Amino acid sequence: MILIPAIDLYEKKAVRLYKGRYEEMTVYSEDPAALADEIESKGASWLHVVDLEGARDGTTANIDIIRSIVQNTSLSVECGGGIRSFETIETYLNAGVKRVILGTKALEDEAFLKEALARWNDAVAVGVDAKDGKVATHGWLSVSDINAEEFTAHLKELGTATVIATDISRDGAMKGTNLDFYRRLKQIDINIIASGGVSSLEDIRALKEIGVYGAILGKAMYTGAVDLSEGIRAAKESL
Picture 1 (cartoon, one colour):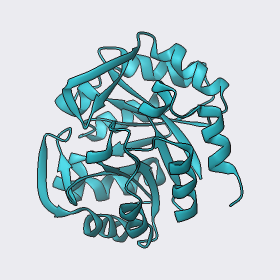
Picture 2 (cartoon, one colour):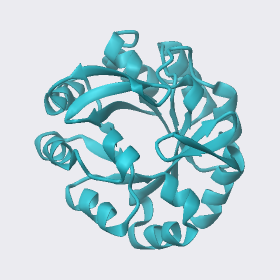
Picture 3 (cartoon, one colour):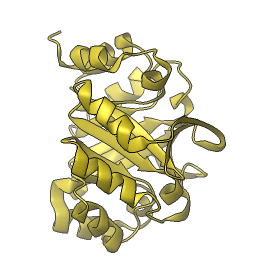
Picture 4 (tube, one colour):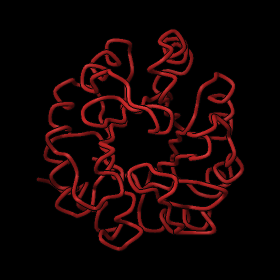
């Protein structure tokens, strides 16, 4: 299993939200590029980046920081946050991002998703953000009537290779990850990256045992609840 540390960007700073709420934001670094260097030095191979302004506004407000991270580290970067046009996908991929993550647009415009998958294949992933089992959209500000597991199964049928699945109720809450949710998603036979609530080495080992493709480490890394180097080792170690 790949452990993927996360940097959420807002106004060119590395921040974390509590359960996706912009009004509950903590700034962890004024220099996200330096933070990415530190993350790489601890053994990470991937980095999960979310442009929170993009998620809210559909912009690429932090593209310069993302480009700098790509150019100055060997990290493979996956990036999400308000990616709603082919031009934005191209902007990120041309900046060296390895994988873009579609969210709201994938749910609301299936033709767009199909075209994106046809053009960029595995470089396009989809974020499935669940609140009470339903898919949330628009930076988690709205909740649809669509079941998250059924939507994930449909994404597989469309040819999606990777889904980043988040239980919003656990995100940033340091209460552990929703293992039952990921067990159910794992049955769909698609690459699942678990996000939200990974707050201990035990969470990492439990997700590895379930057999998910990857897990995202966010707040726990910043608070020191999980040492990134130890987390990476736990994700790689034999069960």
